[in-house]
Length: 147
Image 1: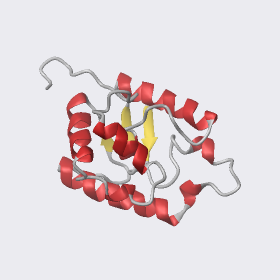
Image 2 (image 1 turned 45 degrees about the vertical axis):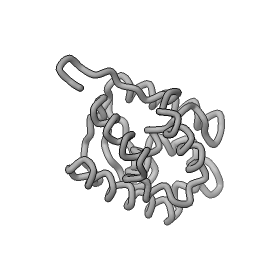
Image 3 (image 1 turned 90 degrees about the horizontal axis):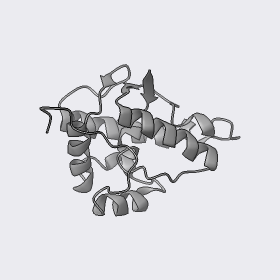
Image 4 (image 1 turned 180 degrees about the vertical axis):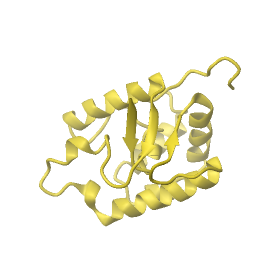
């Protein structure tokens, strides 16, 4: 299967440690983290994605806000530069161990954090990055020959 993600969630998954907006949100994200760790690929989408799904029943889901669309644009711009590949709607990514390590290193040094501005989770994410991502749930083992 494929996991549908909006661009800024490529940054969120780097620091996901099992905390979220609600128990339903966290349970859903835990499942997504497990699938990513097993190697499922990612399809980039516009608007609400698989992470957003539990929030869509709220009266005014924040995932529909223009500020979140801007967060997606900024995250895509940063990641496209870092990864030297298109980060656009319809693109597919295999978040292997090397790519996650590269993204986490850039996140730790603020190279790919423009999309994080104004996010209520920014402080927690900074703490997790400063701690070496030790408790994050999205983890991939390096394949033979991969570093």
